[in-house]
Amino acid sequence: MYENGDGVKRDFEKAVELFKQAADQGHAGAQIKLGNADIQFKLGVMYKNEEGVEQDFNKAVKWFRQAADQGDAGAQWILGLMYEDGEGVTQDFEEAGSMYKNEE
Image 1 (cartoon, helix red, strand yellow):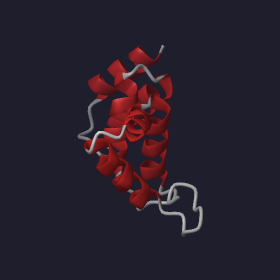
Image 2: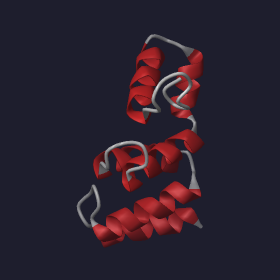
Image 3: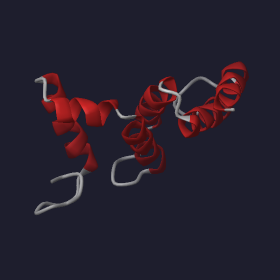
């Protein structure tokens, strides 16, 4: 409901909070949704670009990292940029290069 604004005001933060609660209680669908690299990447984009949620580079890094760890090339690329620019992480050109290399 909150994810799509079905009958309520669209609220991505509330949707993620509820997905986490459901996943913690063993709801397989919520666990899959939060464990899906595409969803993790989209959450990273939302937090990085302030799309429906308050901008939070730390949360963006967290979600991009989870997607990148599953081999998502887009997440690896954006993490590289964030390490290069020091957004949500300590600026680290070596780590940025590593992310770019993984993305290939």
